[in-house]
Length: 200
Ligand code: VGL
Ligand code: ZN
Image 1: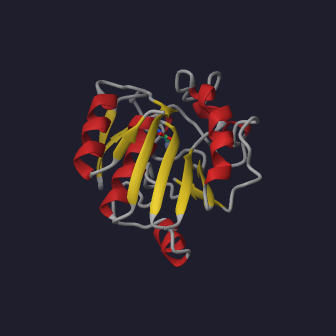
Image 2 (image 1 turned 135 degrees about the horizontal axis):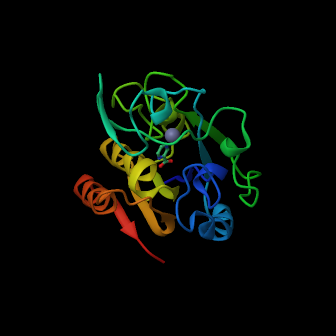
Image 3 (image 1 turned 60 degrees about the horizontal axis):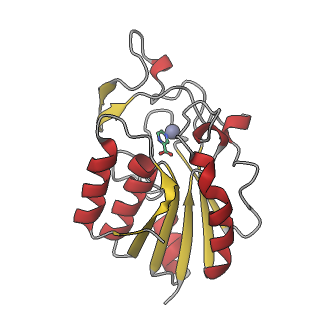
C-alpha cells in the first residue's frame, strides 16, 4: 500500500484577500504542512488559467460572477478572474510548504475548458495525466485536503474514487465556497462515489 497526500489549490486567490477567496481558506495550511511527512508522496495541484479564460465571468458579455452558463461540456459556473498564470494570485500561499512536493500538477490551462478535478477537465474525459503518475508509482490510497471542498476537492475526490483509488477527504483540512447549496451537494456526491469523509 502506497499513500499520497493530494493538496488541492492552496493558492493566494483562494485564500482571504484573494480574487475568489474561500472563507478561512488559510486556516488549514499549518496542519496540512504537518501532515506531509506521513505520506509516501505529496502532490500539489495549482489552478492555472490563461487570461480571459472561458470560466471567467469577464469573458462573457452581460454575465456576472456566480451565474451559470451552458458550455459544450455542460453547465459552468462563471467565476471572478482568478489564478491567472504568472500572477501572485496563482502562487501557492506563502505558508504552504512546497518542499516535500514530488509533483505539482497544473490544471485549467485550456482556454475553452475549466478543470476542477485534478484528474479530468470539466468535460470529464480529457485527462490531466495524474492517474498515470499515481499508477506508475504504485500509489493506491489518496488523502485529499485543500480548497475548495465543494468544487476542486469534490471533483477530484469523486474522480479518484471512480478510478478505484481508496480515497479519503479530510474535511477538517478543507474549506468550502458554499454557493447555492454546493457544499451539501458535494458531500452527497462524494458519499455516493464511496469517498471516505473524515474529521480528525
Ligand atoms: C476552484 C472554482 C474555480 C477550486 C477553482 O479550486 O475549487 N473553484 N476554480
Ligand atoms: Zn479556476
